[in-house]
Every structure is written in structure tokens, then in C-alpha cells.
Length: 410
Image (cartoon, rainbow, N blue to C red; front, side):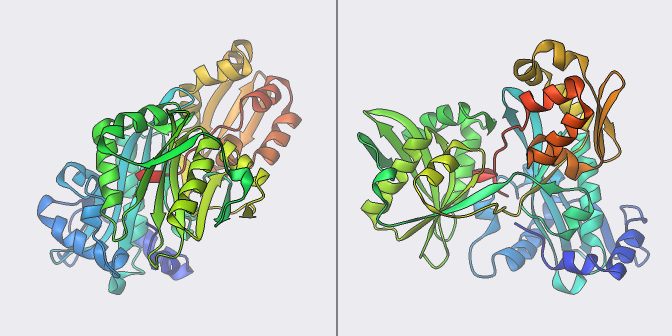
């Protein structure tokens, strides 16, 4: 979910002044005695919070509680940060914390969603106050990086940068011969297939570490949408090799490839088989540009919008700590001598890499994002100019793979 029009108001000079002024009081009651927060939502306030969120994000139907029950329940209440006025929640900034694996390295990532303010209370700086409060709570939980399902001014002003360059492809029926594959069979998901889905996800280079219970919760949320998602398992010569999740637009006219894992050729062949069988007219696929599925879609001549970017932004909290957690990856990709010689440090909202007297400085979080995950061209050029082991490291170890939210979208 993205932030409502709160962000546009806070993007003005007056909005920023109000945000700075509002951030100074403590987290208790304001001068009027009627405003409380930022603070975690209280269990007794969850109905008020859900009324606010349904009014903002589900005005046309649906229920945030049913679709995201794992987030908007008592267990996650400490991560649902709110401002309350006269007993009613008027502004909210929520997050979930996930264990993720990045090329085998264990990290903690927070994902942000459900950010919004009641219309008549927008422009008072509530979203900015809540973001800062939520970030402090994330740091207390040992979060390494934050992924936001949004890219508007509120996030950009606070150091969030585009997550990864993506391409959006359009597959139209009937799919052409390049999308077909002999021996492919596709079937709808069955409960007993849960272990297979988990196994295929576990082989992905960048992935969420989902327990079977978490997987079941996430799938239940997608199936509770006004138009439920559809899950498919793909087998080749009798062996299950891929799966994919498809969502349907509210008007029912198009489908979106929401998440997938496993053999990319099988994903593509399976999706094209379902299109023919179920007579879908259009299937859209937004894919990280470096993913093998993007290469196959390009080779098949599917229509695309180059350099399209979903509204996802992210921030690495501490560049030095993040890079140190990935040292096993750096050793594998760049060699132990190179990786062990480098020193990584946080520098303001950016970072620095040192190799003796050589230093590569990343000015801010946007530079960190580009260096690690995004458009690596400018960052690689800066590393080459720095020279030494830093140049070799950047060429051998980067960019890193990254995953879109998929079912973990909040």
C-alpha cells in the first residue's frame, strides 16, 4: 500500500515546517490532552485502526483484516505505529519484519504498508513523525534494511531509494511458439503442494525465509482478496519444477504474475499454457531486469516497457554492518584476499569502502542502493576510478540480486 495524499501536503515548505514542529513533542498526549502518539496501537484500538485503513485502501470493497490478518492482529500490534485523537486512530504507519536470505546470508528486512492519515488530519506532519518512530522500532529489532511498497515524497525525503530496476512485459493470447515447452503440465495448487512450494522458494538466491505456517498465512491473505489469487504448480516430465501466483485486476480484464519460483522456462511455459486453457487475454509480468525470466521474455519478443519501476523503495540502515554480514558472499564472489582486505563503514546516510589509502565514498542511501542492487553502471565506474581491490570487488561481487515483495506485500 502506498501513502495517501498526506505525502503531497508534507512535500510543501509549510508541510515540512509542520512536520518538524510536530516531531518535537514527546510520544504522550499533546498540549490539548487529546492527541497521543506516535506509539504502538493498543489492542483495544485495532477496530478503529482497521476502520481507518479500510476507508483509505478498501473503499471499493475488501478487508485489510482478512487480506493481511498476519499484520493487523494482536501479535504484530507493537509494529503498528499510530497517532490517536479523541480515542480514534487518525494516522498509521505499519511494518512487518521478515527473515530473508541473500545468497545464503541471513538478514532481517522490514516491509512497510498501510501508511495513511484520515483526510481531515492530513498536512500536520503525522506521517513523518510515524516514519521516524517506526524506524527507531525497527532498529531496536535488529532490522538491516527496509522495503517500502511506495516511492513518494515522504520516503524519498527520508533516504529511501528505488529498490531494483524492473521491466514490465505483456503476454497476449495466444502465446507464440517461443513460450511453449514440450512435456509441461500445469495444475492448480492443492494444500498438499505446500511443501513443494516451500522447496522451490528455498532454492531462490534472494528469498524470504518463510515457515510453512507463514506461507499458509500469506496464501490465505491473497485468497481472501475480492478476486482471489490463483496458484499453479508446473511439472516437466512428471517432476515439479516451478510455481507461480497470478492476481486478477478488479475489472477482471487482465492478470498479473505476482510471484514465482523455480525453473524460469517452466514458469513461462506454464503461464502460457494456462493462458490458452483459461482463455486469458492479457498477462502482465513485472520482473527484475537481471532475472532469467526477463531474459526469456525479451527473447520471446514479448511487448515491454523498458526501465519500468514498481513503486518500491528501500533503505539500508547501517552500510558497514550490512556489508559485514555479507562477508561470506564477498569472499565467494571476489575471493578471500580481496574481501578480507576491505573495510566497510557507515558514513552519514551513505557509506565508505576502504582499501588502505583508497576510499570509495557513497554519498547517501540512494548511492548505496545503486551500488548494491540497482543500476550498477555509475557505481561501477566510480569503483574503477578508485582502483585497487575496490575496483575488483565491485566488478566481481555486484550487483546483488533482490526480490520484489510478492506474497509478502503489505
